[in-house]
Amino acid sequence: MNEILQLDNVKKYFPIRRSIKDMFRKNNQSYVRAVDGVSLTIEKGKAFVVAGESGSGKTTLARIILRAIEPDSGSIVFDGDDITKYEGSKLKKFRTNVQMIHQDPYTSLDPRMRILDIVMEPLNIHNKSKSKQERIEDVLGSLEEVRLEPATDIAEKFPNMLSGGQRQRVSIARSLVLKPKLILADEPVSMLDVSVRAEILELMKNLKDRLKLSYLYITHDLSTARYIGDEIGIMYAGKIVEAGPIEQVLLNPLHPYTQALLDAISEPEPQNLEKEKIVRIKHGETRDRPHTGCRFIHRCLYSMDICKSDPLLGGEEDNHYVSCFIYPV
Image 1 (cartoon, rainbow, N blue to C red):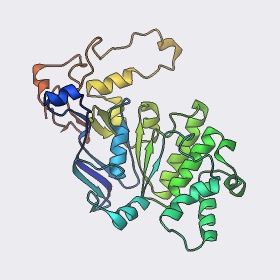
Image 2: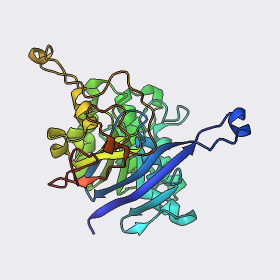
Image 3: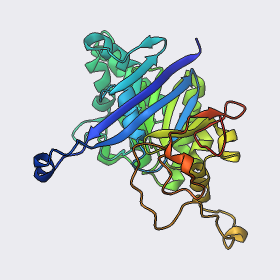
Image 4: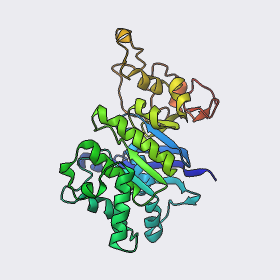
């Protein structure tokens, strides 16, 4: 078996708080469909990118995989085992194999703790290593893996003594110290200076190759997605609308939303700045998400009557899938 993670039709709906007026009128409960029938597969040693705008459900999906929140339905299979109903010691053991890198390096590290204690905390929680000295050695080794040297000096510092890039390296070291198989990276470079982003991405790519890690890489930035990813799923309104090998999807985008995302990327070539961008989203249209049919229907230039029905995620070629009626299944 070459898959490290498989999601099948995973859903998570959050109830919208009702007003007293709605309660008296006995109006039906409404829900935010944060994750709405997502299926994906991550192969061992590969990076799967989930890309989309804010509010599309990317972080909620990562938290479901980590079992920080429970899915309403669907299955999560990790390394051949269905972990959807894991509890207690089984769930704790599963979490040693799946770790998360958070978006904000300034709030994800406790300012009152030394770097040594921050990186050692997962070892303490999961009772890893026999003695404190062994745990210290594991921490120093993890800091060296992310090129924070001299590790013994860095370990004695506090987060406020480090730069943003160094703090994110500490977050990566903390995620590595348990030697996980899968890392969930939630916008790991979005809050860093542009000059530092390339260094962190290069580090993550090298770690993936050297340690045989698998990544679920969450981003809204398709340029970083292309650098680190092997496959990509474009997420909109809780659904994967296009998926496939990253070069295939980004060089030959099929779904109108994917095309719009690519059109929104800044143009680095000065001679191209004056070229008119192709606007693929209707202006002035509502962004309310329909509960049935294509979620992109109110913003799509190509919407048709058939789009009021749910499109399936169908295959084109070369494992390139799209959920759009323009491309018949």
